Length: 440
Ligand SMILES: NC(=O)N[C@@H](CC(=O)O)C(=O)O
Ligand SMILES: [Zn+2]
Ligand SMILES: [Zn+2]
Image (cartoon, rainbow, N blue to C red; front, top):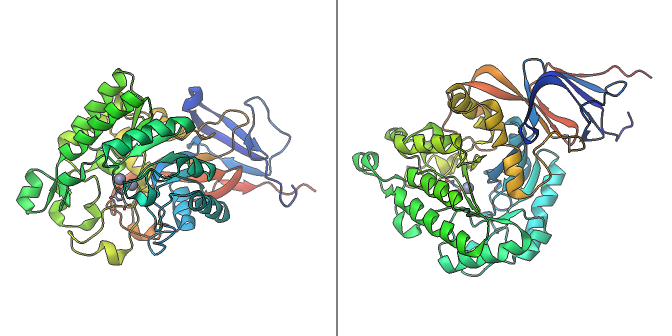
């Protein structure tokens, strides 16, 4: 193997799950020159042999909702630290949100993210451009230039596009590039002063509430706008029962609407706020048991076709302030696989192939990126998951620069074991990867 040549890799005896090809079988997978080889093709020898017995071998996971904080808030996360945290979570591609300082609202800003992602050589990094200039919600950003700079979608996430007129124009205009508009659905006037879900728990704790209706109303509005424009709408971090029903009904009518759910929204309720721990403060907030059930039901019936983390790192000195002062958001990349496996697979709601579909081919199709499958010739982005490993989540052990993790101390099953990007082993827990002895 030449110094710069990519190794020939043999992954043996794993459970290969590739939902894009409806494949689920035990066997060997080969990669050469950074690409997946056809099923029948087995080269003479491998440079690297990975013993995958007892492990799941699937396309590298794709997270369509990640905050990397660079430029502007490098004390929370950088593109390099966030992309490294992604690998430790089994995620080989991330789409990062534009709510940086300055925001990703120009071609140069998008190009900067792409460049920093390449330099880091961790997970692949795809910028999502802002919908509006400066994320101010007033004027449309230069969407065409953002696409030229590498943007794969648009959102003002961190804030909603509040103006219906602007949202309509964004949906209209984005059709020219066949790019999706991702929306943080929330009527801002209804959540002023809120720190948690509005309801029994917020009343009891005397904390400012954010009503479910703030989300529902904007989901309803934007589905209608997607319908009249023919643009593609993606609902970010869906969290309420009514929103799930609205997406279900919109899809039934043929509207181009998709939705993502985050692990925290299918695994915890607003009762957690009784601890006043700011690691349970995120936007949208943790909701009621009824909402959690509805999100799980939406995942089961395909209404919600994507799992995403909304990885939102905040440095301890910010997050450890009193609840009303602390910023919204939690880290999620490194807990995605175990929380999903424990709360959806082990709990009997979804199978591994169903979960992996929502983390591979479905997000790839949403973003229009050539990823998310193991078919012959595809980039060798491969994630190996140990589905039976029992471990305890420890926030201090996270690779992310921030530790604002509400899952600290959780006893979970499953963990990302070894991760390849472009045919290179870029992460492993160790023990199963071996370099073949150089047969000179
Ligand atoms: N989700 C959050 O609670 N916070 C996100 C913003 C967002 O996703 O809206 C952040 O950037 O910190
Ligand atoms: Zn958001
Ligand atoms: Zn977000």
